[in-house]
Length: 265
Ligand SMILES: Nc1ncnc2c1ncn2[C@@H]1O[C@H](COP(=O)(O)OP(=O)(O)O)[C@@H](O)[C@H]1O
Ligand SMILES: [Mg+2]
Image (cartoon, rainbow, N blue to C red; front, side):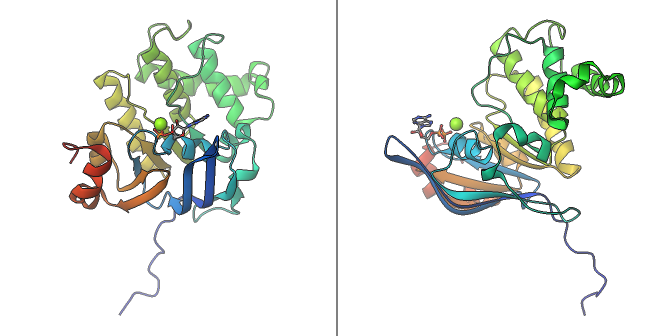
């Protein structure tokens, strides 16, 4: 007999993608009929170059407009309504807890590392992020979080500008981790980072997953995917061609080798 008071399975924040299409110059690059992200704590999104992984992530953030379709954030069991992300401007995503790191790194030249972190924290919470510099409680709280992350990840000079490509990449990722998002999308986070830094990033990713964040990670280094993810979505030519746990995906040599070449499983 089943126990009538058994607690319901934990429900995490999920992203529901429905009939989403994107073309560039008449060529369809994303065509996903239906996909749910976030049913597992850490999910991998893999597939060959040009499969549409980055475009799909950008569409979730609404930084690339959809030609068709709908993308919705479904809340975790504990909270209210669903939010139609495909109706929201990109700069409102963080205030709904949806955050993405970038494959190609933005220009951080105008801001110091410290200021970028403070602004990211303020921007995720307030319509007018500059309030952080005039309200001391807000400043103290944010500064504490920023300091905690700066202590853990090593930057050359936190009060200077991010210098190397690796440091800019790390800054972009730390900005995302620090927000403790509901839903975190990471687009090739480890490319260009030293192994030791990658390990630290993955440690924080795991901690976030344990505390309830849903994480989707696009990664070239499949060892990261096999060891970290609970579920894998395999994209090719704009669509999801296979999904399953890492073991199931690895066992499907035909698909993996067709798209990624030999030696990946
Ligand atoms: N802004 C753009 N303009 C034109 N073509 C684009 C643009 N962004 C991506 N593409 C094309 O869309 C396809 C999918 O790209 P992308 O989403 O970056 O793939 P992935 O991240 O899986 O490598 C590629 O053929 C790429 O050249
Ligand atoms: Mg990409």
